[in-house]
Length: 458
Ligand code: S3P
Image (cartoon, rainbow, N blue to C red):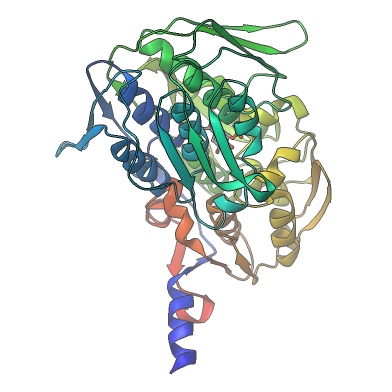
């Protein structure tokens, strides 16, 4: 009894990807996760009512939505699929009666810490097992300089408790890494600061917070210095005026369908209205350099962000060196790039990716181990990975533990589409954090992803 119950439970949490013959048709990718978190937070701080169209209904974003409600903001989910936020202004948040549990949402918890740091309220932040292992000092260190009281658990981990201040100090801060989460947390705390806050990133990270603040009427400047440093400057004590938001479709989710179509012979798919913010398109640039047949058309700006339609046809890919400076613009795409690299001719060298070691899991080692288990030759250093491409070597057949990392799960299910023996991925529940409906969407394009392990799915 015990055995069969365990087996059933385990199978329920697994997906198996069988070889796909060819992918075709149109894939409607869900809304952008980064933009969805920010829309909920900034809409809450605005004066007036903000309508959000295209919000990602992923578990991470829903955690942020619940947290904003617990902070006293009225957020309604309309029948038309739009979200309506009644903003409370920059000082209107209420202390939550319970700890804010952000689940798996790294961006949610880190940006919210910034938000609370600049408000006269106390909140405790918690998360799931994966989030509870991720470093928080990179956020709390700069926030502490701004005046709030912060207690961080041993090892710099969650739970974190912040008693914010209504008079935060402006800072001039130079983070060690280009991280949109660090930058955004500081900016959110700085909205109520007296004086101008300056953040000097080593190079530009995704700038959705800056664009969206501007969309809400905030004056904020961005400048790239000769040495590549990205300098963001914002005077505090500004108010946000409600403004409707259209969330573009997520380029980081589109990445899986793109690579699947490139590596599956005979494929030809289109992905309409994908976000094309230049700080998010590093993977597209890289895949085109590898020989990928990707056509970008109908480029337009909607809701202040560039979007475009993509057409992807299967291609013979070749290995390349991915410039380290490009890492920030494709930081979440290295696991799926590694899948493309495994099929490419020659080796693909990915330097400057130490940040991958502190994502939902250590994405360098989990990707490298998973590829090796499926017959791919991979080497890694502390801050780089090299994949030796060879389509014929991909045996498949391994059971990959996603380690509760959505992008690892989706990457190996994509690899299964071209491997000799199907690939099973366990702990797939976190796919819903960023890409609910992933398997259905891919199957609609022609993939063959089935519930359960190999035996159960066959
Ligand atoms: C995100 C920033 C990135 C990225 C994460 C989303 C954001 O993290 O990995 O998935 O929305 O700001 P870092 O800013 O820490 O690189």
